[in-house]
Length: 322
Length: 248
Ligand SMILES: Cc1cc2nc3c(=O)[nH]c(=O)nc-3n(C[C@H](O)[C@H](O)[C@H](O)COP(=O)(O)OP(=O)(O)OC[C@H]3O[C@@H](n4cnc5c(N)ncnc54)[C@H](O)[C@@H]3O)c2cc1C
Image (cartoon, chains in turn green, blue):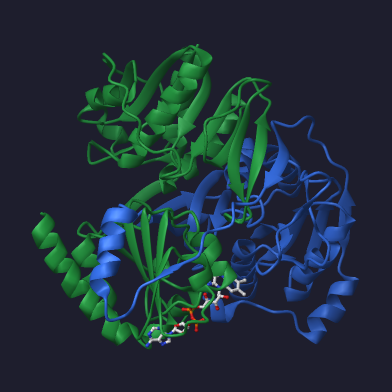
């Protein structure tokens, strides 16, 4: 019996979300008194997973699997899960993990709980706490199938080191890629910029910034902090920013460590999507803006005056704390 | 081309979220239900295929009689007929199994669902459905073109986009981007009148058993008051973020 974690890598390197998923898997394994195994694809340093308590990593090094393929990846994970009698399979909630998890659930006839924020309660059955209604509520969900799949929300459980002697196995699979399946033709990824999903800090701009020509203010601040840029829905609807930056209930969820909202009023649909962020800062010239009720820190002021000053001060701060 | 659009009946985004029955049930009191926003983009894209390339569009929902106004709205927007699987949706796997039966019976080329419903945010129904019927699957789909029996799609990935091709039958988990917000179809009077005459077939459920069970709900603890910093005193904000919040 084991807990199996899918540890996602990109260009051979693990993402932080993979380590968080591994930490979580270890937490369950300890509760159940069983081992923690990991499956990765073309990871260069599967040994690193030992830091988070993984006892054995199965790493598939195979050119055919160099591009993410939800169908084939799910099949490989299912293959390992079955061979290792995995009772619980843990994934992050990256776009790729969310893509393959339901396919895996069908392979394993497993109940799947997404957006899970805490270790399960295993005293009486197997109950996980997950977010629902786009962060407006939590729900305790019992998974009642033999095999169970858990998607852990980003930044909810955190990293927990548990230095372990890890054994890495060069995994060979029987899975063959289907010619008839979905084929990736091209990937368009901004390599210089951190994504909203992976970012520790997100700087978000709203209609209060008046127009796309003013976005250098947001971008300069983001660059100073190594942050991702985001926006409110009307901003992307008007084409000031790409749809991929739209955050909120109908856009991307944000669960960063720090979220700075500039010229965003704080409508319920916006707040729902960003509420999982740990620390929220609002900058708005209207002291009555609802965002002040949801934020930890706030400045009542004109974005066009505050942002350049903030960026400049942060540059100094960074220089002094480097 | 035969298209099936899966519609989830969800509380409007402005709804107050409360619970009843000892916090085990969502309180629908005073709540307005709508077509799940992610599904709405897919439905409009389906209408585009119907108008531009010739397609039939069926809509399906899994739910009790209360969902009928929502599915009628989809008919008013232009879908040809509706199917309602008469059971309470309790678990994503169960819903996927019900949809799989409808999908198989209808022999669809393209099935459009939303990447997640905004109530339980499970994000699993489209993928499970695809796997259950042996169709291809593309999630977080923001663009979809069909030519003959080949689909070209763009999906959102973390920090970018990916262009994919697939044969049919195909299931997508769709979202904003499939069509522009300004192109979203809203029912007009004629559509509403016509929808009344369109078939709404109620079918019996087939799925047996559940894989998960939603138990107690709770709400996040109320937040403390915001700490206001003077616009002239940015250093204080940086100090708070660094020393108190440990966020920078
Ligand atoms: C079904 C549905 C789904 C939705 N989903 C989302 C979603 O996912 N995400 C989302 O964001 N929205 C969503 N919305 C829209 C939401 O209701 C709000 O309309 C939107 O969030 C408002 O965006 P905003 O804050 O940028 O603009 P506004 O509400 O116009 O706010 C602009 C703010 O900028 C401030 N401001 C103006 N000038 C300055 C200045 N010089 N300096 C500082 N501040 C200034 C103003 O005081 C104001 O508070 C949804 C709506 C619906 C109906």
